[in-house]
Image 1 (cartoon, rainbow, N blue to C red):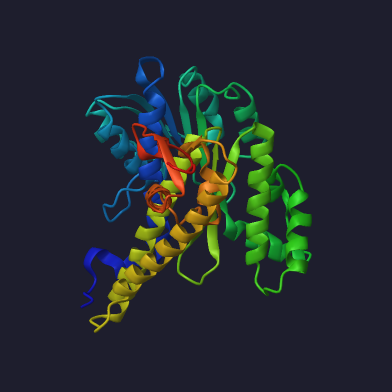
Image 2 (image 1 turned 120 degrees about the vertical axis):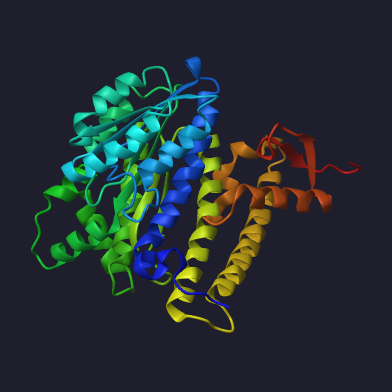
Length: 390
């Protein structure tokens, strides 16, 4: 039976829904990034920046991105030396943020809350990260770091691999919608969007998306602009981009895209796993919100969401099996983790690492796949198409 308002779902559940997804991705992926890249870094050092940190903790006591990052660092305190920087321009929010950061600094973490604009602190952070891994989390409300500043950073002192550099940013769909709508009406100050995108190319992309779509909303526009933005940054910085739309509710338009940049196939693989896991938790949150709004029912919405999760997992597995067969058909042995785009395919964002491993085992049991070596983790398994008599 569905139950009332536990956890304050009726008060802020809708508002919190998109954060559930984002925070699940951030918490899971960041910890893996710090553990993996820090294992071979000088003195096990890693640097992390939250460039639009807000208060660090919600007013209801829930951890926001800042505290989630601090919690992840705390879990690795014994094995990694992580320097964390949290930037917030709003004075009142910065005071709250500084209090949260101070709590963790008192426990021995190397963490600082910095006031002002993130652009004012980027050089300091990059200098701190010389020769060690760097993770940038940029989650603004609206326009964020300019295209030129971001690309300049990633093609400047952080252009080499190693040390690893990765970026997870929020590309606002709401901003794209508002500006594209105003552009269509002929009333627009385009400077904010031009700065974010590194030019006015987005106008042609937006117009083409509108003209070629049968959708009467601006959703095709925001997908097209986000995808082209990610492609351009990735090409300029020689990084592999991923764009993931984030929604407040099922059936709604996205409110932003999470855009991820990496130079590592491992990064693509582990990020895909994190996004797939976050998708499941986001769907469960949708069910809990609906149950809280509806009150006791004979068939809880959360149960509907569990069934949806199961259905999505089956489709993702079927898709992964097809993808794996296609890779095996090339006839060469390969390590799973070196083929994230090929194996996750269109199920990227739904499939998890477990999906790919399940596909591998299904083809192995069917006699279609041979395992040549097992790695320390399942994703490191080396496989090839089974040969006659094996």
